[in-house]
Image (cartoon, rainbow, N blue to C red; front, side, top):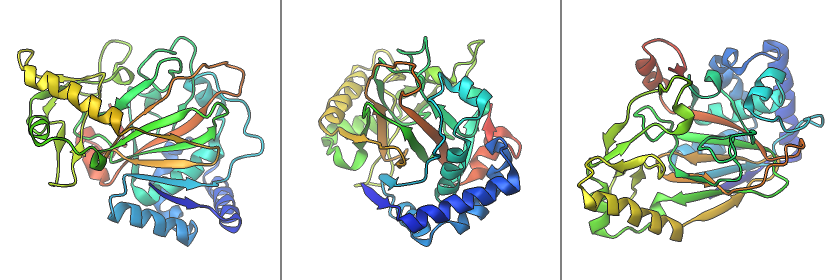
Length: 319
């Protein structure tokens, strides 16, 4: 894991930049600012920009910025993302995350996730405690690569911690640390698996942002593998393919042995390579008292044209 601690003078520089962005663009929805984010991010501290250039060029699997600014008047954790959207809470923090993320990739969104918002709120939601969504709490969020079902899935997932009083862990497994047996790797490298949309992509009428995809679980350069897996929604394409079914179970056991736990502190932003890392979240008990765990999240892609070709327009929201 690569980590950079923000110095006090750098924090003040970021705060001034956020002020300038809000003066220029107002307290608008980030979708109106996103096209300008990469240009504005050139005014971030030099060490921050160099950090992200290195993360990208070295294909760093997990990177953390710590000590990023948080508002003194952050307010209570919203009860669900819809309340966050309606009230606009944490807007300054959205700008911080957008600026930092823009150095690493291009933000985009999904129409069936949080009404197509570019920046998501990750906070517990009543009635969703055991779901497969960012509103869950009492159920663990299973290990997965983000949006594994889609060819236009993100290159990076960015998470910015605003509040985590219970020290809930983000769970990660690095592909490079698995050391899979050759026979298992061979099975996982075959196009023998269906990757289906997860619960967060199923709309109110049962529609999803794409159909299930037939592909491998393990792919990429030899000796530096990439992964595509969601243990809730990846299955053997052929129900009679016992070897493929067993390979998923065996992969899960290997991942359990390579699991790392990262506790994000307020002011920490973590950037996960979605091809080299699977991630999840430990279960916790939501209190809905304004002090629950609260993160902001952005999906990033290296080449925004992949999104444009998927949407058929110059839109960052995949429907």
